[in-house]
Structures are given as structure tokens and as C-alpha cells.
Length: 323
Image (cartoon, rainbow, N blue to C red; front, side, top):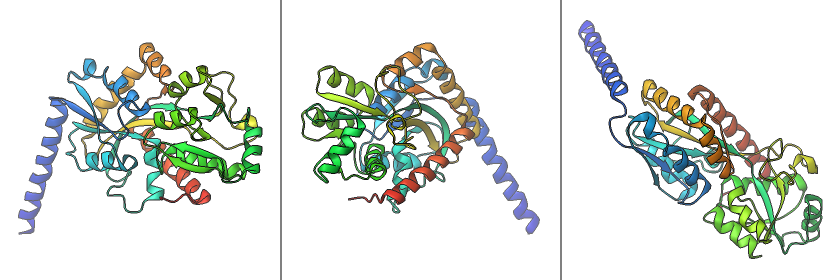
């Protein structure tokens, strides 16, 4: 009896391996969907569409972007987590997805358990801009203004629990100030509100900020990361202005459902790396305010783990709670 059970078990394992091998050999045989949580026109959406447009030439199949907006990206993530692990439904994961687990214990998925990392795509700094009507020309003046008017200044974000929300609360914590949070549906809405003077400041993408800066409606005071950006060479980093340790950056990558065959992951990873390595792609992504940054699946898994830990520590230290 035991021998018979072992025989059936062996047949089942071999069959599963055979199916997996067959899938990997024929993949991709049909259209691939890249699910994006942020709305159409967002920086995440733009990055997804820019990269996915070049993948068909290497994969031999179309890659379409599908927006599933809501719950800070949780709706899109849950949908992909529950999709078939065959490489035909992928998720554009963002820095915000490494913040949510620290804020919500009821997430219907686990970022490290329910997904297989494919590759990091891009990284980009966070820009702090203030309304042109605000009498603050640098961070020192902004902090002094905030301290003189506790709770009266406001900062906009792309939603509760997003990276821009984390950025604002981290600013409050490090500077010892109280600037109230105002969530918006997207970065463009937040930037427009700041330009109109409806809120004091916001954390837009560089492409969203530049037209409003050129029009004299927004003023950039600081940029995150370890160095200044070529697109905005006159904007100093946070550290240059005395706020050391403010190193939170935005990023986007691609995940597949857990149990997706490793050979399928490898094919996707190789195609993405080739696309990101081209000068054409670097130039296109730079215009969107981000830099291409490919990783192996193993490197990306380690990166996500470190981001989860770092953001979890910040959420706990700062005391961010979902409203």
C-alpha cells in the first residue's frame, strides 16, 4: 500500500514538472497582461506602458497594461495574487506596496508569500515642491514657517499609506513640525492643488512638477536620494539641507503570482533586462523622472525584503495610521 502511494506521488510530481516544463518551453503563447494599481496617466502607469511597449519584440506576444485602481494598490495586488501562476498576469509593484503591509494587517495577500519577483524596473527620487504663494525659498525657511504655524500648513499625497504620505510624515518627524496630510487620488491632482494654493506642498513626480514650476506656480525645495538630479541640478537633496537619513525613493518593479515556473520568470527577466539596457529606453524613462534599474529575481526579492523592513520601521516610528 505504501509503495503504491509513493508510486502515485511520484507520478503526480513528474506530471506537475512536465506541465511546468511544457509551459516554460511554449511561453509566451498568448497576450500578457501587466496589472497596474495607480490610474491612467500616473507615473506608474507611464513607466509600465513605456517598458511594456518594447517587450513584444523580444517575447513575441503583446503586453497590455490593465489598470485596477483602488485601496492604495491592494485591489490590483490581490487580483494578481489570485491569478493563475502561468506568467500571463503580472503586477506592477511599487514602493507604496512595501508600505501597505505595515499599515494594514488585513491585506488579502502577502507580498513575500504570494508573489514571485521578476525584476525591478525603475527607481526615482521624491521631489518636495511648495506652492509659489508660500513664503519659503528653502527647507530652513519652510521648517521655520511650519513651526510658527503648527497644524496650519498642509501636504498633499497620492493617498493614505502611499510613499508620498510616508514622505510627508517622515518630514514632520525629522524636522519636529506638524504639517497636516491631505490625500488625493493621484499625483497630478495633488500637484494641481498645490499650484492653486489649495495646499501648501506636495511630492510630485518630476514630469508632473516641471510644467507647473516653469509656469511659476510651484517651487522645488528638495529632492530625495544621495545626489542631485540632472533634470533639476539646482534643487538640493534633503541631506544637503540638514535632514540626514531622508533616503526614501520611489521605485517600480514586476511580480508574478507565486509558483510561476522559474523558467518563465527567467524569460521575462531576460527580456526586461535587455529592454532597460537600451539607450532609447533610458532616455524615455529619464523624461518620466525615473532611471532604469534591472535586477535578477533574487536581487529583487532581497530588495523588496529590505524595503518592507525599512518602511515598516518608519511607519512605527512616525506613527502613521490609516484614517
